[in-house]
Amino acid sequence: MYYQLILFIALVSVGFVFGRHAEQKHFKSILQREQSYAALLTFSMRFPPPELEIRDSALVAGNVVISVDYFKRIAAGLRSFFGGRVAVYESLIERARREAILRMKEAAMAQGASMIINVKLETASISKGAEGQVGAVEVYAYGTALVTPDTPAFTEVVLNQ
Amino acid sequence: MIYENRQVPEGINVSHEHPLKEFFALLAGLIVIIVTVVLVLAMLANYLAPLIPFSMEQKLLSQMDAKWQQEKVSGVDLQRQQYLQTLGAELASAMDMPDDIQLNIHYSKGKTVNAYATLGGNIVLYHGMLRKLPHENAVAMVLAHEIAHVKLRHPIVAAGRGITVMLALASMTGLGDNGMIAGLINQIGITSTLGFSRRQESDADADALLALQKHYGHVAGAEMLFEVLQEQATVKSPDFLNTHPGSAQRIQRIKDFSSAHPGDGKVTALPQYLRFEK
Image (cartoon, rainbow over all chains, first blue to last red; front, top):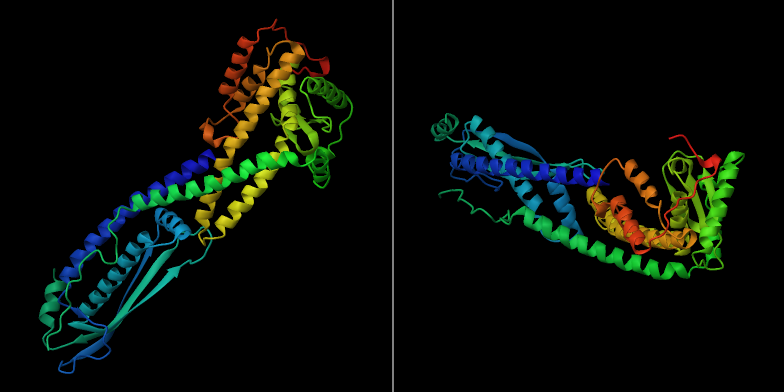
């Protein structure tokens, strides 16, 4: 019982310290890359703007899997008892979603695209419902990258950074 | 037409409240709920379980199949058991036992340094415990402590408390789908029943000391029991995680009792068949 308590506190602390450090670092990197890639436009509309001259198009995708840590799991479990916003998972999903979009943008830039349309997101939970598993979240972003005559200049600027 | 992606302000999807603040608030809320439920159930068990007739306890036990019930005692072991039974009866007569309660003292060959009282007035003393006790007074302390449990109906109270608390915790853990939180709820629940268990032990100690005082005219030698238990303890964990009060505390209580009731302090020797090589 004594050891179980110590182990529990240790696991929660490790989860909190490392999980929080990783999260803060990740958000910093997300913010910085979002600014760098801002010129590559993303839209959810299904069809390209009619006046746009399109040279080429390609399916691009970005995929990310982020693990839940022990602290988040316990905190979410406590939340499931009382109900309400699961703040610890909200930040996790936010990170995964934005990271997936960034990776999709990187894929589009490699194609020399200036715009991604029809952007969609899929989420999946890995090892969902498995007893004692900490679990992870997967977010997959995909869309149609459009290459226009005026794009190469900007794409090269970003990729050469 | 000009297309653009405007910067979305931060903090819409993510709350900026420190996660530990929420964590501890929820944990504290959960602890308060569980402790309240356990407290109410344990107090009900304390009050209601002793109303169950002793004969019902014996019936309950007849449906169980404990190891000590099957153990065949013969030869010198039978002699030891008879000695314990006689000593137990003498101590019981100094303890105002209710008339309907019968004591059955069992000697078990087990090496465990332990003794316990269970349903139906049954008391089991392990060889492992007896071989460490140097004189009759220490053996009498063990017996009187277990007899006090029987007299105070502790086994049925503990069973009633255990079953109701387990049921309550099981229905609480069924609410969430998170296996880890189930473990946490059970730990908190069990830890909060331990206070009742420690209280029972202290009550049994106090009753046992009164019985020893009445039987021998002093309580000298009783502390040997806890010195033996103290030697056995490998891990020293905080009191709130234990079923029994700390041995040092129990020894201190005997010393306090002894100085309030001074006697000649002469300990009685054990018969040859209960003396063991150290």
